[in-house]
Length: 146
Image (cartoon, rainbow, N blue to C red; front, side):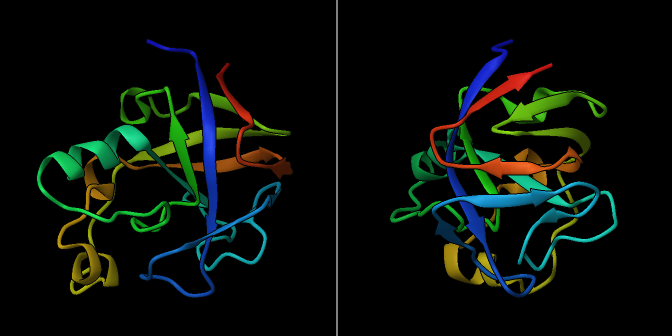
């Protein structure tokens, strides 16, 4: 398994169940998540990550025009097959340390992502983390499996 990956984008939304939009950098707060993001909070799914590899699978199925954040992921990654990481795995992402808490999720009925994109890969291949050590993450930062 590849132990080093890269951050392609940081994405944010002010409310849940909608497509997120890219930002220049994200401030990740220990025990909370991405500052200003609707999904942040004192729970186990503070940050969501999805690999560009999953986007490519959707494109191979004929879905065109996908943009980072379309699956409501906070961090779009490249180089690590995220959904193969065991729960409890720690990742150093930019200045932060995050711990994998969940692989995949239940899908919301009538979620804006499914309505916009047609279907969603997040329930199978997205992962969730909690922030163990806060800090800033920018596109281009390294992701390291600890």
